[in-house]
Image (cartoon, rainbow, N blue to C red; front, side):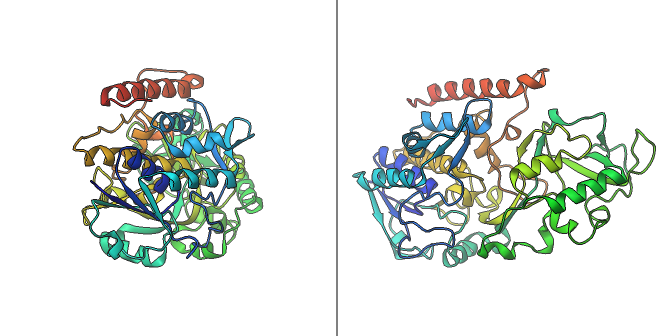
Length: 442
């Protein structure tokens, strides 16, 4: 009988173990707590939520709402636990942290095909990982230094990253094209960038808002994140009122076609996908709190009504360059038999991590029984997320949460107020057809 070893008892590891065990595959799940803890963990249970207790929005008009629906239909233990331990949170799905962890810990420990071992795995060459049919590393974004070093040896130093430096992404439909204009530096005929011009008053008001904005306080082990390669935009503003105007917002080489003059400053937006439905704010990695990001970045001319598909962040996070180091099954190309699941693959967020583990467990369970399982279509939330891990970006690969910008653009002209609904309906239809095609049951 096939046997799989999973390293890490977080959301991804638990959902992966659950899917494998329910497919009849024995699993040994290694969790280093309470023997050892990361800097962020405090409790002994599995699936400990160390940040927010919210799993964000519900309903098909949000990409994360679609992912919830798809995970639930695939038998996700994380979703089962979330609904069982839900607490009031308006239109969001939030849970009681302690009860959530307790629920999953009980389910995992009580499953006859899952053995939980409480000890650290510090290397891919650990004796405990030998002789099994597959090893899944689901150690999360704060993998131990020893395991990280072993992973670096397997994938190469240049393909493992330790900090997210993520800029916000906005929906094209929410940009005011009466104010923004196309063009790259010195080449107004190019359409590589969309540019939002600022006059002097707008720029100085924007800088003042950045300086006054409420920031996320870093944890002790995250303070080294402020290095020159990815300074937060507000940290650059702190160096002087004109620092941004001579840095990422410099207007040199641009002429605003509406005025015929060079702007005082300019914010550049770079296309995020082939369909050009999403744009990221170049150089806008930030430690501002989410509500502050929305308020302050909407001060940028052309973004007054911006819809944010992803908000910016800078935080410690160990993850691989997935398109380079993983194959289509989430297996390490340089280390056959070793798979990655969860945030270490380059997905961002609680449910995205759990969905990655769920998919790996589901698909691996099929393979170990001599069958194959086609991936869900890229029009679905899960399919789009998995496709992100295979798509080589123009620049450095960055983690992403699930969002409509990861999906193909909609066909035909659809009014802005109906677009989210259209994405949702298309995703639901595609997922339902896929479920039937591959023979899965709700």
